[in-house]
Image 1 (tube, rainbow, N blue to C red):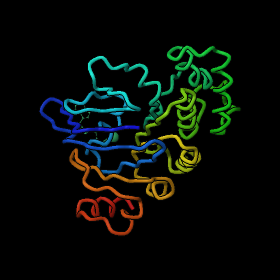
Image 2: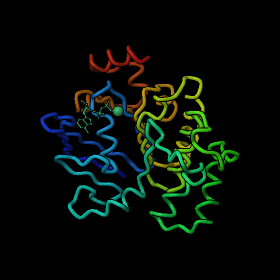
Image 3: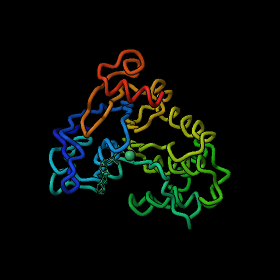
Image 4: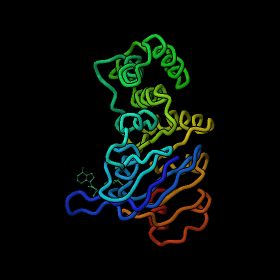
Length: 240
Ligand code: ADP
Ligand code: MG
């Protein structure tokens, strides 16, 4: 579903991704862990071209999105993203937030977008908040709206960049629960998170990124039981 080949990213002189080769299968749940500043956001954001690689190739669902004339808009429609900071539109209601992109970008008729939007809001437990504004919701509720918004684009792939890092501790679980239920449905998921309980429950594979490189990868148990590298062990000892 996603293939990165020799991906490098520079910000000026700063070499942030140093030759990433990575394949994510259809339906796979991949968790990315690693220290702050190691390039995790740059890596996941490159998967829908929010960051353009300086070098290398990224193929999503058979399309080379790094090619000069790649249909970026189409790609963004099939690869949804959930951010640490929710990024909801403050002056739009919850339902408007959830329907805006399908209506404007995908040209879905309003009624249809609203029906599916309500269904996804129900899935994340927020149907009764459809006509509220983001500022009237808790952080956990806002993040669940952001997930409903992503789902209403009917993506093939959903990317999560530290979706619970900005939340108060008591709200983390409600968001993870929604993510776990999604994971059980066959969508391809790439998740940057340090929630190792989540990783253990849903990840098919975990990759540890440090200094812009994939240092180690394996199923979650590998990271709990016997990581190979000192850097991985040190990192895990700090987060677990
Ligand atoms: P992580 O998500 O693992 O914390 P990032 O991918 O956000 O790491 O950042 C990797 C490195 O790239 C950091 O040193 C960060 O300061 C730098 N960086 C990220 N985005 C930009 C940018 N737009 N311009 C310049 N430097 C950036
Ligand atoms: Mg980050």
